[in-house]
Length: 169
Image 1 (cartoon, rainbow, N blue to C red):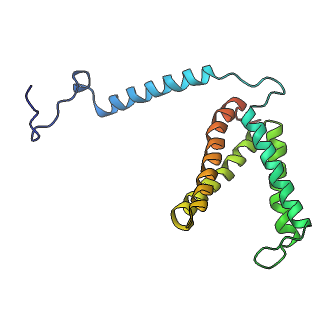
Image 2 (cartoon, rainbow, N blue to C red; image 1 turned 120 degrees about the vertical axis):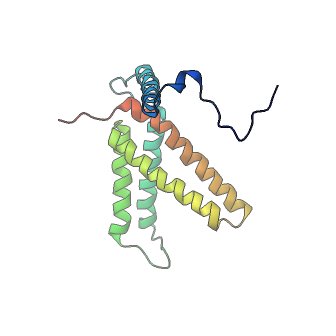
Image 3 (cartoon, helix red, strand yellow; image 1 turned 90 degrees about the horizontal axis):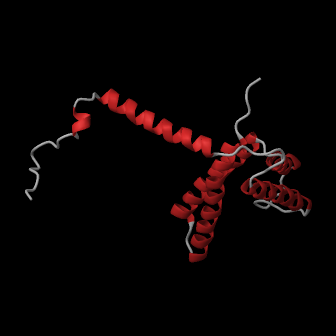
């Protein structure tokens, strides 16, 4: 079998030879939309009172974070040698508590907000892994943080699709 001449341009497939770039793009979009529609049809909407497992776990994690912030403040924990002001502890505790309540009720906005926090956590962990981790223990802990937060994020995407974005009034 003869090797193709590197100086010659590759021949397009026969079916695409007459198609314009716009027609090829439109065919690609049509195929993607067919796949998207099939994926949407395969999703089962949540039953009344149903909550995906990953959303339940997220609600429990958010509750634990909110409680740990309050407990740390009440225990007199210092940050950089100073005790934080009440609002500095209360604001994130309330935010996480509100997200925990929203996820427990399977609300789209709460899952989306939790995913936003996960994105910040993932980027921070990548930064820490690339520039800050100096010991094997730090690298292992950062990789574990990436694995947990990445898994949460990944599985919450499908849960969000099942929860469905609320319709505008």
